[in-house]
Image (cartoon, rainbow, N blue to C red; front, side):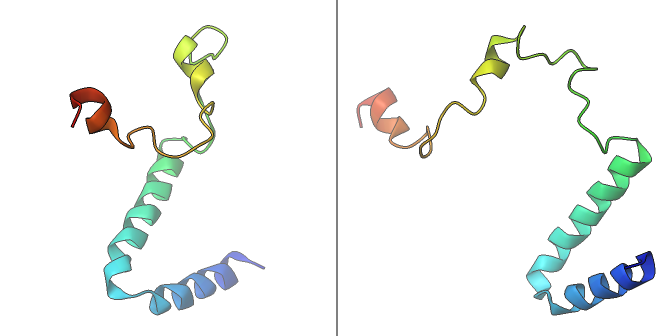
Length: 80
């Protein structure tokens, strides 16, 4: 499938979107264009010094396997 076919399929899908979703679609396309313009299409964490072996917070990412941590937070913090 070439680029022109993909663009045509994208236009068809956009026509199917409800009006309240058009802003979201536009924002997403703008985000993709921004990434391409500034070369941000690949993860650049290592170049920015984000190394899980050296940063204890990065080692914790993905460790929680259940629901929201904020569940019942008011009760925990304030005894409500």
